[in-house]
Image 1 (cartoon, rainbow, N blue to C red):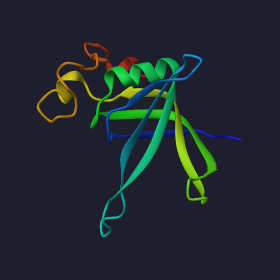
Image 2: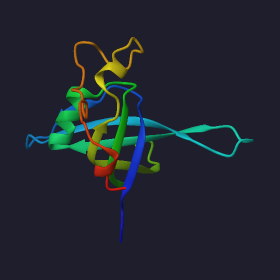
Image 3: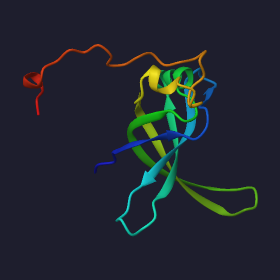
Image 4: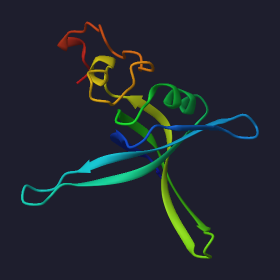
Length: 137
């Protein structure tokens, strides 16, 4: 069986970092993903709850902010529970194994409000000099 999901979307709120009683980090956040349809249909947006653990959770809590474009590699988890009203509720969540920030610092600190100036993510992939002949595709 394969349970793998790769998503690209924007954070809908700042991540929330918590610690378990054993000291493990867990971060929860939501992402919005634009669904593209044919030309004559309107676009829509899907929202997904995402959780990540340990080092990934610490990274996301430190560097990611509302509005950041992120790439997520993880798995889908469905769970059910009974809420306070006695109703059975079923949820589908994404458990992220890896979260990548997909915008450079300059793209997110240009006044768009996507990231605070005090806590910006490090530049990733800046300054790589590679020719087209070296690419594997």
